[in-house]
Length: 290
Image (cartoon, rainbow, N blue to C red; front, side, top):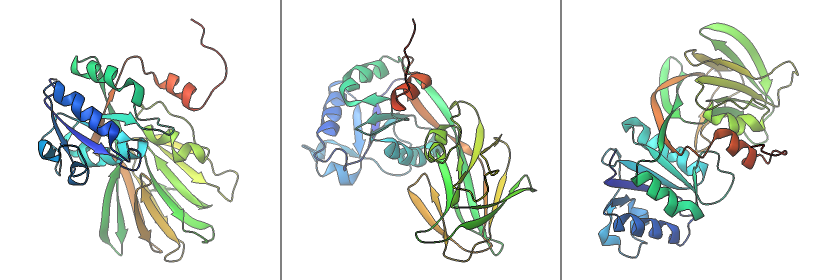
């Protein structure tokens, strides 16, 4: 695919003076590629009049670069997945399981992209909605995870779970993480969940500090429909989406979660293997035998 127009989604807290953003814009312009950024970012650039504004519905670009960390890429995924725009993640610091490019390799990998030496990986997303008194009050979708958890100072919460309308378990815990395979290396992993290869289509249900030792992670089919009923008192429980959007839950609210019809298209490179990323990011010991 020929790249003619790209959008930049920038975390300006990680690129405070927009030096990396400006360099990327300059590099892209030298290659006759049109660049679009948000109004907030544009007004702080060297030549704001020479960039176009990136805005919803984000379908007028060939690719999006996210500059920040995994959180920035997750936000980009929710913005552009609806229109199937590929995302290339540039890591400006931090752990970065999803972002493929570091600051120092930016020029090299930009050339790879323009030469077509990259792959597009389609990642499963989750969609969900909240039912309250038979009314659908909120819909959402995400790439990593949906978390139902207690608020600050709240006691253990009670969540009743069903899969395909079959009762499974009543969780008494600090919360519940429902993740994709992509999200299995995020909050789910911290809560004791398994690492799942990202191309495997599945949902991982992991309790957070469960009161019962027998309450373990469940890996379920991607076609399954998960239903969670909140049995705790009102205002004690909150739902978060990719750690970035939050919604207050009430007693007897029903959360329904399933595979989304949208996919996140991630730009990847042959030399960046998942297991290599795990070794580096998790600092696994041992040596590579060639």
